Length: 393
Ligand code: HAM
Image (spheres, rainbow, N blue to C red):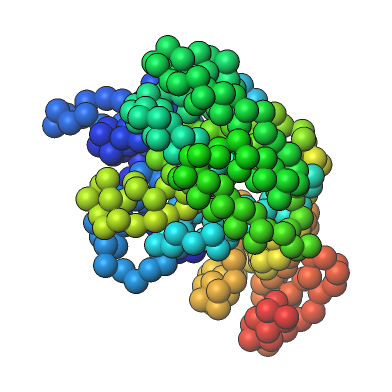
């Protein structure tokens, strides 16, 4: 995945187009000095879709893009829910095949695994199943959106009541009620149940087949997370057209990440008809999860060096040594507090630096310095070239 950087402030219409009523209400919207209605980005997907529709329109497919940054949604701040938060967002653009959906699911699982999070559970559904039934019943998209939003907020009874109020047929209400009750960890059985319930709704059956294909690809011993398929699962974002999912761990009640397929957003922004699927991971929630599970990451393996002059007279030489080290790509700092060697060494140890170079007049006479390995607590007198090689080892 290649990184793209999108603006924090964008036109309101772009960001609001398919974000869903609930998220739309939570946007930070204002007028800029030019009289434009703009907003702070509440997510990345709309901006990435715009980028693909314009600047990357003719790029060969698939396109794999990621963004990392801060997003803004007005909310009551509480554990794991903030008004400013971080996402790492991945989009796979140009493929409508189940392999692409499976890649996004697997990528999310891999990231959780590589951060040592355990007992991960994915909740998976398919917007196509729900929407196809409503479309076949002649229910307009805006009204479908209301139903999806209510389902997203787990207000299933309200969703069914609304469907009744707008004249949904008895049969349709029953199908939806039965669908909402279907959930389970055994994909083949769940898909079979869905097929029985949606009989007579051709497009919904096709959507169920698509979900089966995706889940079949995930049937591997290499997939380490638990999956639960929920036929009545919906997400507030309106652009989804296919598989949707959210990732959880037991210690946190809110989702650590969420995503899905959106095959019509890029054309909405003037691009070619381009299928796409993606996920966004809430980085604040990942960190919270790691704290709750007591996960620590392996230490950064980078070499970090402090250069200390023994006396003021060799400050210039110490400075020169630091320039050579940096040019060789080593993270280097020079002692700037005028500390004695022993004080500088204890400071370097406190901050987990890997090496200290001590520059003294005596060694300099022979063109040498002292290199101290902080971990091994051993030091050697070496030429700068030798020190560079030793640090790089
Ligand atoms: P989303 O479910 O709205 O999806 O957000 C994804 C993740 O962002 C959530 O699972 C959560 O971890 C984090 N998040 C959301 N709101 C907050 C908040 N107020 N405080 C802390 N974390 C939060 C999207 O944004 C879609 N754009 C995902 C996507 C990408 N779909 C396709 N491509």
